[in-house]
Amino acid sequence: MTSKRKKSKSHEKDIIVGLDVGTTKICVIVARVKDDKNVDILGVGKAPSYGLHRGIVVNPNKTSESIKAAISEAELNSGIEINSVSVGIAGHYIRCIQSSAAIGINNSDRVIQEEDVVRLLDQAKIIKLPSDTTIIEVIPQEYIIDGKDGIFETPIGMFGTRLEAKVNIITGLVSSIDDLSKCVMSCGIDIDDIVLEPIASSHSVLDETEKKVGVAMIDIGGGTSDIAVFKKGVLKYTAGIGIAGNLVTNDIVEALGITDEEAERIKREYGYATVSEILNDEEIIVQSIREIPKKTSKSILARIIQARMQDIFELSAIEIQNSQISKELHAGVVITGGGSLVKGTKELAESILGMEVNLGIPTGLTGGLIKEVESPIYATGVGLVLYRFKKMNDKTIINDLLKNRRNNSLTMNGIFTKVKAWFDEL
Image (cartoon, rainbow, N blue to C red):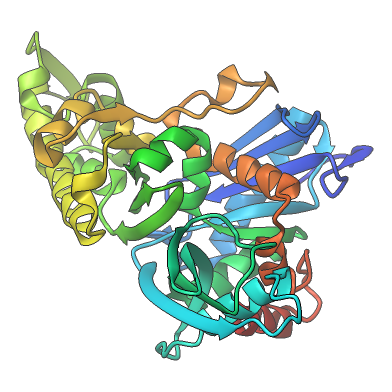
């Protein structure tokens, strides 16, 4: 796909690439690290996504071709040869499980070391899971030292003889993660990180204050809508639902008898998520499947859209309730993703969720093509870059100790053993 190789390479230390493999689009963000606080966007690549259904690979060949097309455009746009990426993973098969563990501190000076924290989190991962399920992420919620709770920072350097932790364990299907990994690596691209997409998106559309006081994020993609709930600066709960923008478009296709392309066009140009937000109900001319012009109206279109968007927010409300801290979300809800761009979505969400709702637009970038990615559709792609950037600057390195037991970059050689080994070690 790439016509000519460039001099700069993505595996250079100052280059970060985020790959968002969505159900309707593939998005690639290429960035350069300026210093320990600043990231510039060098290029963007986007291509239609084929071969996925609700975030799961159903046709590997089509998915690989879609990834290649987006990578090629990003290389051309940035002047960078892309060799490795951080990949987002999501889907309605993602689950969040609460666990806990305790260990004794056997150091003679009773000072808690990095190795003790790793040992504790490894202990927390010893839970019974179905054979087709693997652990994606272990997220500490709280540490307890000798019975003293309320410790939310990594306790390295503190004194104690007994260390406990409450954690959230994020799980997913082995086959789904394996299939996506193989599609990426079949393009000749190595994988730096596999990141849960709600976590990635949160890095671009939520600030630390929102995460501290309590906030829920709903990322409405093409095939799935992902919910993430934060409190005290950490992820407390996450879930995915299999209803998103694609189903809204499908409803318009079936109700009006038009093509997918025409349905997407009128949804974008004339669509409203709630009928009450329409100030001027006017006639819309659409092309039928046989390309014969036919008439509808904004209000009819809005009724079709509202029914499905209502489903998304009602199911999201249930998942937010399942977090058990819905009453503590003082920063309300942030909606993002391409599905959040339909006019009136914010108002519909507020009426169903019963709390303040804001639109999440990527921030945290300092230069380059900032304007080009200031849209909710780039929330995950930009978030993958910022996640990787934060990890590179993270002084606690606990995450690295947990994750870097596998090779930093996976290659096509020995893919099955390496990916399996990574799953076993996570």
